[in-house]
Amino acid sequence: MPIEIVKPPKRHTLAPAKQRIIDTADRLFYDEGIRAVGIDRLISASSVTKATFYKHYGSKDRLIVEYIAYRHLQAAEEIEQLAQRSDEPLELLRLVFEAQAKKVSTPGFRGCPFLNAAAEFTDPAHPVRRAVQNHREWFHELLESQLRAIEHPMPGDAADDLLLASDGAMSGGYAGDSIAASAALLRAFDQVIAGARQPAAA
Image (cartoon, rainbow, N blue to C red; front, side):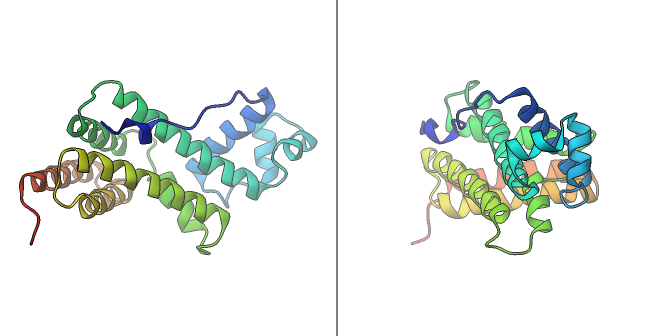
C-alpha cells in the first residue's frame, strides 16, 4: 500500500509557553471562531506575557497559519494511527470515513476546522487559505492513492466525490442533523467504493 503519504509531519517538541499558546489557539479558534478571538484573550488564556507571545509567534496572522498547520498535523496523525490497524487500502479508507462519521456526532463538534478557517478568509491568496488548500490537496492525494490501489477505474473523480461528501457531512452535521449527516456520509462512501467494481467508461 502507498502508505508514505499518510505519514504525518514530524512533531517537534515546543517550548512550554509556545505549546500552551498553540493549544489555546487550537481550542479557542475552533470553538469561537478565529476572528472572534483577539490577541489579549489568547495571551490571558495561555498564561503568558505579551512579550512571550510575540517572541514565539510574532503576530496573530502567523499564529493562525500555525494553527492550521497544527490541525493538519493532528489529522495526519489520526490517519497514521488508523493505517496501523490495517495494511489494506480499502480498509484504511473505510476506517477514515467511519472515523469522520463518528466525529460529526461527537459533542462539541462545530464543523471542519479547515472549512471554518477558509470561510473567515475570503482572499484565496491569503496564507491561511493557502494552508487550508495544502491540507485539502494532501487529503485528496491520500484518497486518490488508496482508490488507485484498489483499482478504482476513476480514482481522481472518486476522490473528488469522497472529499465533497466529507465536506457536506462536516458542514451539515454541524448545522443540522448530525446523525443523518453521518449516515449519509457512509452511504456516499459505499456508493463510491461500489464504483471500483465498475469498468471505466471508454
